[in-house]
Amino acid sequence: MLIVGASLVLGLAVTATGLVFDLFPDLKPKPSATSEVTVDSVAVGRIDQLHGQTRITPEAKKVNKAFAASVIDIQLGNSGEKATTVTSARFDFFAVTHMLRCSGTGGGAIDYVRFPVEVPVDVKENGHRIVQATRFKVDPGRTESLAFALGPKTESYSPAWVYGFSLTLTVGTSEVVIPKAVVADVDIWEAKVLEGAAASAADPDSSDYQRQTHACFTNLLKTTERIVEEAEHLPPGWLEFAIKFRAVMEE
Image (cartoon, rainbow, N blue to C red; front, side, top):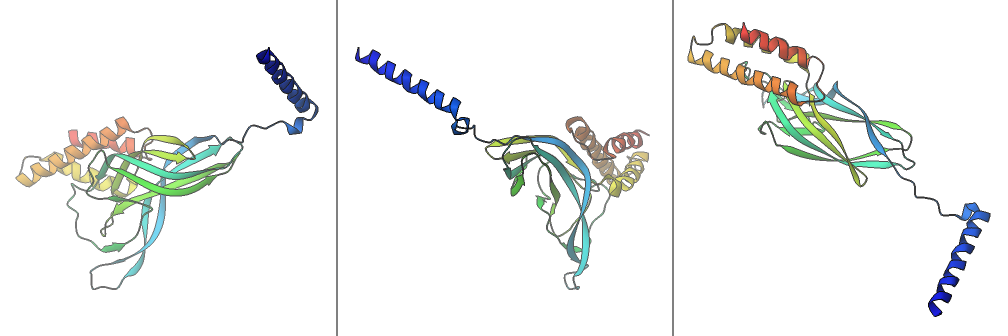
């Protein structure tokens, strides 16, 4: 009987509470506001200009210079009712290569420029990771642009670096993943690569140097085509360049 009586009292209390909420709906507890962040679009064709300095020799005077930086631009939408913050960006690289590595270019000025995301020049083609801390707020009902500029961590700057990576953003207590993307400025180095590749393919066995050069361009072509196969987001002109690269190597 005590148990039945307790159940009866509890039932009456619950009924009374429900009646109060029916009579006074403003008193009813409201669900907590949430945020829901999605990737609306990804662009990898943007080139930003970063300000730095350069000098021809260690003894020369520094002069101001603008440096080109390849950018990934992510449009993040928040369809929730609460603002949220991107706190970190993890870059997992599947390709890091210098497109003029077979062209015999070297030397150059000493450059002083810091890229927002600095990639060491001696990383492996596959498997390197960089975690970048950030504080980027996405307000509710808004679409915001989050961009990262990548460049070499070195005193010898070159716009011929190509970076392929997947990107994982930590947003609040969850993660947002951008599949494999590639940032590069194809227009800057395309003509020089194709010219060098054609010359190496014309007479690949005339000397040890020519054989080594042709082998270098062959490996570079493999990397170029692997990027086409793996990446979901390619910069403008990359696919067309890969087709022309294959053509000159087979002539």
